[in-house]
Image (cartoon, rainbow, N blue to C red; front, side):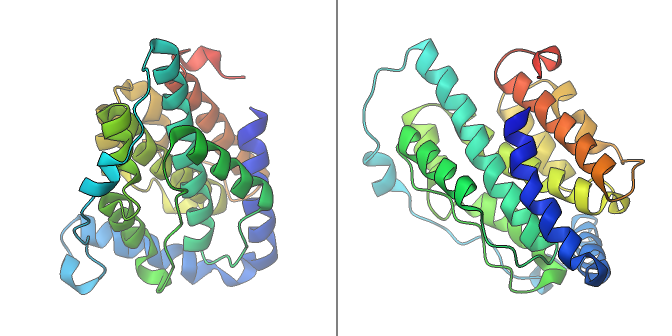
Length: 243
């Protein structure tokens, strides 16, 4: 699908410029994230931790609107796409790229946020590349802008889950293109939020499997195809609906 291929293009360009210097950047975040998930490294040693965010005022400020089937379906797609865009850009930064967010991506995020009546999501600052993946997991769980809470209150808990699921899909697709050799990332989060969003496991299963490709155009094409298939499921079309 053209949307995803355009979005992935800037990440590929950024990586081609800085690729020769990123071996440690790619392996470090992945290895530390795996160690934390397996309990080999105490989570307390790889701050940050989720901070409690009071979203009560934000939730009360959500506009009331008629939620017919068409509105809910459109909001589902928008929530997922907004999360995907967030993860896509955050993934590039987690891998060590200093690329600026493209204007086209920023404009689309503004449009999606306006349509959903939520703030525009902001990618977390990468303070240490070694714990970038863990920090992104914490960021999405903490919901600092109360986007997930607003979506749950204004639409449904599934819309909240779709936004967070999209964030992990976008980040995973970026790593699949930039560093497929490190294997799948965010496996528990993809499963958790995918199930909460009401999506079948076949939607995200390809991201749970290791890629046989090496970093480059073929890896990006594989990631784009997976992203297209997931979007088709979000749209209710099934994997066969991807174009």
